Length: 95
Image (cartoon, rainbow, N blue to C red; front, side):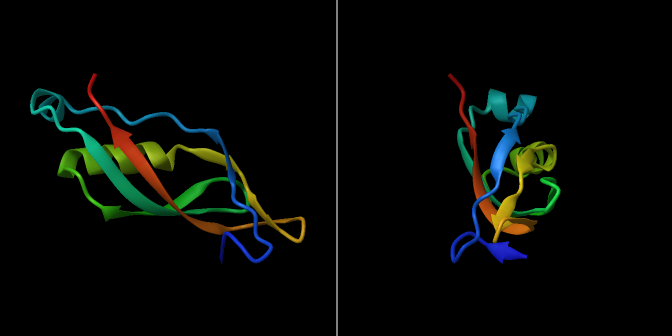
């Protein structure tokens, strides 16, 4: 597994659906972000998703569930697809 930099390019997102708000969080008007770490595999799939910065128990779960469905063009090192450790921020905003 690699991190971006030193000849390793970042994976490019191809499918990133937003998480669903849970009713309780919507009623309580919870806004903010969840920060997650994940590994994007050489096949462009997401694994080992972990919450780094929490927002709300239920919204954290929704963020993790959504990110697990994301797909990427994999990161590259010397032209070869490699697994890359990434961090991402998932926003929850009510308008």
